[in-house]
Amino acid sequence: MSAFTDMIEKDNETVFLNLEEFAERRTLKYQGTEYADVPVVLTGMRENRRGQTMRDGRRIRTADYASGLFETRTVLHMLASDLGNIQPEKGTLFSIRESEIYYRDYYVFESKIEKGMLRLDLEGIDE
Image (tube, rainbow, N blue to C red):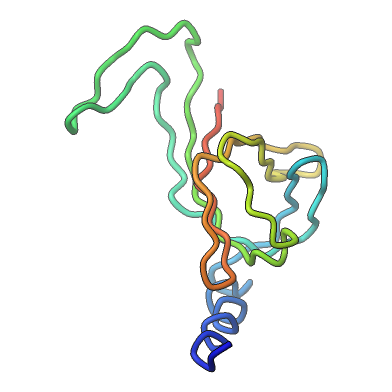
């Protein structure tokens, strides 16, 4: 590896995943395996009403019989090594612990590994 790549990977841990500034520890579940106290950065949390889609920059209402449910999206950043260098596949279930007993379930929409960092675009349903 080059010295530059080594610097980037070190910065991922010491700067971007700094627990005192950006990151927080979360317990994750993927394919039946629990990964405890992993430093992660969750960004882009947002909710959209189900039954609405975007077309040409406009929100269009579509038929949906699941009233009161919202689609949630978030992006999770973490070290790929903290997940055993596994790259989750699109459509698979990925869970993030929200409290002592509750996990929020998401589905992997997109997954990338670059310079030792794993980026997951996640989608879920919330009440």
